[in-house]
Every structure is written in C-alpha cells, then in structure tokens.
Length: 439
Image 1 (spheres, helix red, strand yellow):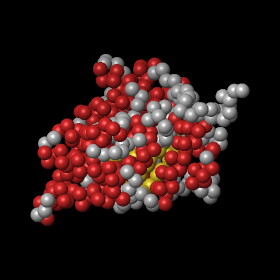
Image 2: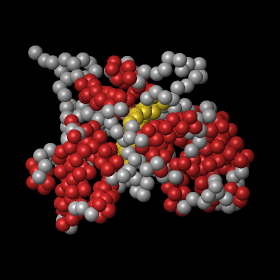
Image 3: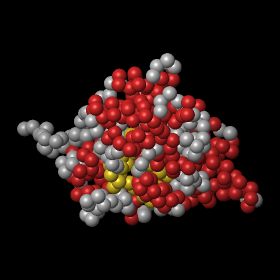
C-alpha cells in the first residue's frame, strides 16, 4: 500500500469482508484484475460526462464479483464528478409494475443518491441545494433576480415527459428556500423522491397535479439526469443489482412488462436519446440466456444484446452492451489476499505475523479442501482469511503454521432464489395464460 488508510475506511473494509459482503467504500484498495473491463467502463463514464448515454449488463456466475465490480465503477464515477444511484431489484422493487413496486424502486434510488462529497448516499437534498446556490451565484454575477435565473435554467425540463410539474416543484423549493419555509422545502424534496402516494396530497402541498408513478419511473430518472447537469455535475449513473429478480417472476405478464421497460431503456441508451445518463445492470447467465424466462425469451431485447459472433476461441469484445465477468484465477486471489493483509496491517506488513509463505500455505489448504472453488468463488476463502488475521493479531503467542490447517473452508454455494409470485395480473403463470380459467 502506498499510503496509510483512515481507521474508518480500514474498519469498513475488514468488517464487510469478515461478514462476507462487498465493502461500500475503500474498494479500490483490494481491487485485482479486470483491467480491460475497467478501461471500458472509464470510457463509458467519460462518454456520459460528455453528455452521452450508456448501458452495460454485467453478467457473471454467483461469486464472480458482480457486486464488487458495480461498487468499483460507482466509486470511479463519483471521482469523475458524476452523481450515482444504486439499488437491488426484488419482489418489492421492479422496473415495471402496477402496484407501486416501480415507484418504490425510484424512491430507493433517490435515497441512495451519492456524490463525491456524500459517497454514503442521501445526497439528493445537497444536489438541490447546489442547484440553488449555483443559480444565486449566476444571478449575482449577472445582476438580475434569482427567480428569473432559476426559472430560466429549469425551463429545459418542461420539454420532457413530466417535466412541467418537475420544474414547478423545483420552483416551489426555491420559493420555500427564499421565504425560509422549511415545511414546503421538505414537501418539495418528498415529491422529487417519489414519496407522495396521491395526487390530491401533492396538489394540496405543492399545487402540482401529478406525482411519480409506476408508469413514469424511467421518465423521472431522465429528468433527474438533466437536473444533475443543471446542478453542474457531469451526469448520472444508475446501478441496479440482482436483475435475477425479473427472471424469478412467476407471472408471465409481469415478467414481460419488466423486459419491455428494460427494452425502452436499452433503446434510448444505444440510440443516444438521453443525455448524461448511464445504466449499469448486474445479473446471472440464466437471467440473460434462458429462452423460457430470461432476456432471450424477449426477442427484441435479445437481439439488442446479442454478442459478437467473432469473439470466440479466447477472443473478446468489450464494446457491446454485455460484459461477461470471468472468475478470479489463483494468481488474482494471491494478490487479493496480499492486499487484504496490507489493509489489515495498514501497510506495515514488514512486522506482520503472516508472511507471503503463509498466504501460499493457506491457499494450498483451501485447494485441498474445496478444489478450484476456493478461487473461483472466493467469498468464503476471503472471510476465513480475515478471521485468521484477526486471531493472529489478538493472540501474539499463536503462529500461522498451527492455525492455517484448522480453517474450515466450505464451497460458497448460491442461495436458492424463490420464485416471486405476482398477483397483479390474473393468470399468466408458467402453466399457461389460462391456467386459472374455470367453467
């Protein structure tokens, strides 16, 4: 390690790894491999910051590092002055629904909004404040009314679907800011977060006639992307994990509705219909390839994501919308464990009781116990390694030679995904669209 980590960052990394989850911050300190993929994502970030659009599907087996890769790209985007949002799809949060799940996904995304100064999330109010402060500075430099500047800047929002009321709420926020009306400011933030459930409440509180709904989920993401640019950020990157939740939907119509919404996003992204907006979506090979329930069951979407026919026999093409993550190699894992050790001892590895030889011995023990799975799906391996470091640190009399071979390492098997039963449509189950028909 080239520099000492802050205790907060170090502890966050180690606590996450010991629990078997991906750290939210400091992830660059334990990154290994993926050089070509990272270079391609840097190009995407640059294109988004230049006013373009982009979409990538990160496909990999369980344990191949999809969530890790998403978090790494998110940190890269924050460093490049982009705003990021992230969420996991689930039964309660979807791209398409008629019972509030899409609006719930939108609200979760906005709550997770992060900037370089607020990487932990909850940055949306500060983005709105930044827009207002930049407008005030412009008004002062041009010697004109702040209201005129704000209304002029948000006028471009009114040309988009749902943009008129979006702009009206931004205007209401400024009026509340100018009059120190904290309740009205909070109502404006609630509307922008998609937290109003009825149009009546929105009309009473803000004087607007629409709210964020399931059907306007994507339209409001495009509005947010443009608003972030008005606040003088370079763009917006939306990260969505666990797309396998769409694959697990039992209802055919609900599943197809999600794929149709996904197709709309893909079309806008690859045709350049959006500005300053990028999507990073993570899923398993089954989600992509299954001809009965996966993306390949939707002909139009499948054709958009079709791979390069010439990328065979070890040849790769990272320019398409799908990036397939390969599992780590033994060499990658060796470097990774060395970086974890560096983080644990904060760079002072010369006096560490775990030399390079111990890492090799630990890897050999894992290989003997579970075979190649120890480096292909290394979650359990890394977790046990962090535990070994903790015991050696807290018990100076202990030696790694006696502890390494006591590690109980098991194959990290994926959790079984239960099928998501959807009752928002009648029929449409896997047994046929008329399975519930009765005479």
